[in-house]
Length: 127
Image (cartoon, rainbow, N blue to C red; front, side):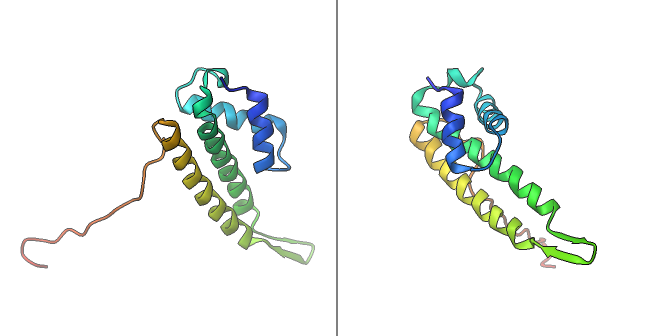
């Protein structure tokens, strides 16, 4: 069975510089969203999927933080970090793909579905 502290330590490698409380909360949230009562209930075979989902949650949070502070102007000094949000978006996408692979390997249902598809509806009168 999985251990909260072990998974939080492993998550720190993937998301350096984050507080331990944040890491633990993302791991706990990932376990709960996968319908485990606690992190300790996560079977070893599903630990990597839970860890990957926790990384996805952490990167989404960081992307939201950076999007909020994309461009600042303080006392005439401008700082533009608008590219950072895009960089985090790419990392979120990669983490999501990794999570899907790990969920598939673990044999657990992925919380986030596949690709979005669309179609065009045409009117019967051709307009």
